[in-house]
Length: 195
Ligand SMILES: Cc1cc2nc3c(=O)[nH]c(=O)nc-3n(C[C@H](O)[C@H](O)[C@H](O)COP(=O)(O)O)c2cc1C
Image (cartoon, rainbow, N blue to C red):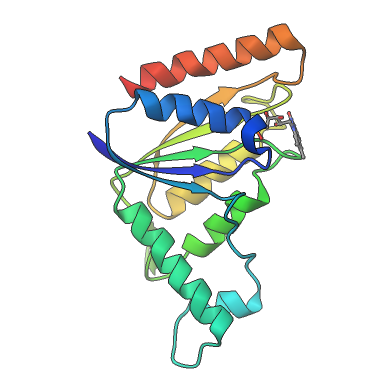
């Protein structure tokens, strides 16, 4: 039984393959409560100088900074309340969606989600299981063009989430047969993971 935070980041709405795979996974998980955030439907503001300053807190924050800080606090609370975090990460132009990057930018807070020590940075969001579902039109797993998975693991590890499983669904734009295989393989892996 676990509390699950689901982050969807596809821009393709009802046509999204990662959203569909996430729904398939969540149905198979033994959950107590599920918080779902569709980061495309409810976008997180883009980090700029104002917001970066606001995330450090203080007394003289303008309205935009106060709103960003409150949202950041809420996003971090959602992580803390979860045992399992499911992240949809389609590949767009070799990277994660901007919408997911915006969420990362709001949860990276010195002294709150990570701290600097004499021996280097320490992540504070520990004890979480993360499942990343990454969908791709082509095939990139383990190759030079897969820069997004090392990035995802680096960022998540930095804030303390180092128990990360990555489920790949690839070749989705390489013809019907290859796409069907890519989806079936991912569903099979997700079902095994949910056991
Ligand atoms: C804007 C855009 C950029 C994309 N860039 C890539 C890419 O760099 N490499 C790739 O293999 N597939 C790429 N694709 C294909 C997607 O990864 C594929 O459609 C996948 O299913 C997207 O996940 P989603 O359906 O959950 O949005 C791109 C698709 C879109 C819409």
